[in-house]
Image (tube, rainbow, N blue to C red):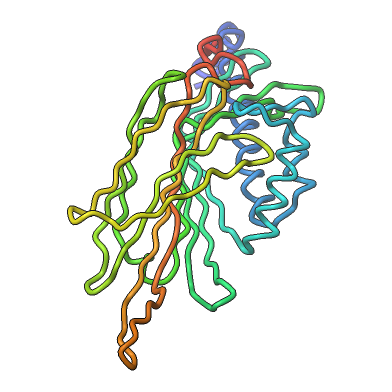
Length: 283
């Protein structure tokens, strides 16, 4: 038995150098994973100071927003929507020396109420990539980019609708593309809708909405031309649901539901942050 133990010890001594890098990588991977998970904890506790501490001071995301602007956006969201629940699933982490890439799926959910006491829900899901560098303060996020993202904010009767917004995930600059909105309104309900395109920038400049009655086939489609300003875009679908009532020979309309569905369209060449993920290869 002692001979076997000695043999195992000697074998471990000779191979430990070849395993050292693998063990080190796993340690770094665990550290990156902890940073990602800590971000969710800080976000769910609305601890902006702790959340920002996980980012590098020179952070810039794929839309060209720096850490100061990002901080303001997060605070604005928390001031507008209370008790947002965040979650994240880490799909893959790749380590290369002092660089790391984490591919994740992020979700958020909140119950919201308008001033007219109409209940609503905010839901969002995105596929994102986080870029890290190892510093003397540990792993820090230096950039991130959103590959695809869908957000819905629906109130009243709009909550029960199966709404489909179809857009391309990626387009070339100055290229025509189609956005298609499809849903079946409740019975005896008049549905109006609009499709608009907004550039991803700060401060945000909202495009004017033009509402029209939902066609009989329940599909609203519109063509857009992608911008040449090296900015990504959002397609915003707005919907309104109304019912009619006759009172003393006058027709009255009552709003029964409304909301928005937003999808990202990435424009090729608009990515401004991070480093090329193809340059990060496991050792």
